[in-house]
Image (cartoon, rainbow, N blue to C red; front, side, top):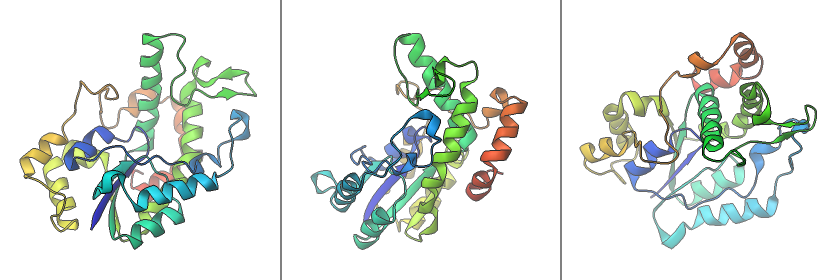
Length: 244
């Protein structure tokens, strides 16, 4: 049996990877999670089928023939087929999309503080507003729009019995019981001493991608129009993920 961990960016990779001593060695070359993004951002919205094949091959054989790996890999039936055929258990690490939006927003602010000329994650040019997302007065609204287009391309992982969905919030607030539950599902394989795994899941302030990792931080950031946009675009996704 093998182990693969996948997560949407900014969903708490710093927690789940150290627990299982995985490395980020699978890159999703298929670009499938961008196909539904609005045209105004000028992105290539076609699936890269050569990239899908490359990613599927990398999922079939992990680097150095390892029995475990990690990647920010969106759902594709081709990927699921390979992982099922290779007897791979998958942990799908998710986080409340509203808190992910805040993490994206603050990550950009950190980049600009360090270098005002930098172009952080998702700083796309809006062809309608003639500005990049983080040049606008309200980038959070754009990030909500992007989230509503991207998250559905990940949630197919939740439909398979060889996949276990792991919530960031459960690991953050109740790591011991959550890890025990995961290890039972893995029949004990890939698990170490429980105390070591709990320490591995603790926040790591020295990690350059870690900020605060707070649960429910979106409540301090979202204004009424953000809440209305979430209800319009994200609500069904939140329900499916168990965050309603």
